[in-house]
Length: 99
Image (cartoon, rainbow, N blue to C red):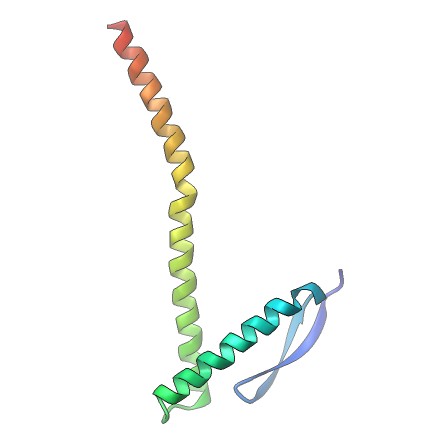
């Protein structure tokens, strides 16, 4: 599938975005959330510029991504830890039977 360049409007400015046609629903959802979050920041901080609100939105998204990545990393380790625990149990069980 070939990538296409779409123009999107964020905080009153146009930006080119490279995307695939099947990613269009994700792009629309992302832009909808972004515009909502920008409006929320504007209503809470009316003296901020659009750039200030955009920076705060990006920071918020970065923090969410970091938290979600950390949580995912913990869950990805769980199956490995369970296998390790099982192997250790087998080792200890077999060593106790030898004594």
